[in-house]
Amino acid sequence: MTHHAVHLTLPEWIDAEVGDVVCTDDAAKIALAIRLARRNVVERSGGPFGAVVFDAAGQVVAAGVNRVVPEHCSVAHAEMMAFMLAQQRLQRWRLNDDGGRYTLATSAQPCCQCYGASVWAGIDELLIGARAEDVMELSEFDEGPLPADWIGELERRGIAVRRDILRDEAREVFRLYARMGG
Image 1 (cartoon, rainbow, N blue to C red):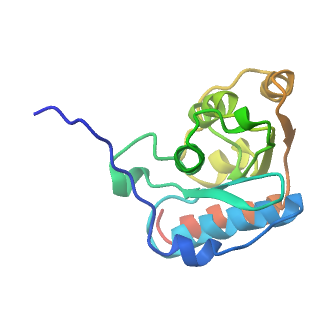
Image 2 (cartoon, helix red, strand yellow):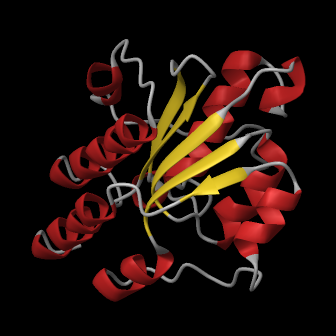
C-alpha cells in the first residue's frame, strides 16, 4: 500500500505552554524554546529540543519540539516542525516572501538537516541556545556535518546568527534528559 499523506503531531500540552506570548528580545525568544525543550523531556513526549518561529513583532507564528521517536520520523526535529507549521499557517513555503521578517529561536544549534532547512525556510534571524558541541557532549545525538564557516554561509544568505543565548540554561535541558534516562 502506498501512503499519500504524512501526519505529524505536537504534544497536546504545547498550546498551553506557548499561549499568546509575545517575546520582544532574544533572551525571551530563546527562553521559550528552552521551556518547550524542557517540557518535552519532562512529559516524555520527545527529545530535548524546542524551536519557535517569531514574526517581527515577536508574536509566535509556530512552535515545535522534537518528535522523532513518537512519530517514527527522522525529520520531526523541533526546527523542522516549527518551519512546517509556520509555512502551513502562512500558506507559503518561504516565510519572508511577504516582505516580513521572521526569526527562528532554537534551544540548540541546528543539526545538518535543520541547518539546510534554515537556508530555504525564509528566516532572517537564527537565535541559538546550546552549541552543537554541547549537544554531543551531554547526549547521544550526532548533529552531523556542517560547512566549516556555517555562520558565514547563513549570513551571506541574509540570515543573521546569534548564539550562546542562555547557553547554560539550554545545556541544563540535556543534563535533565540524561538524568531521566534519555
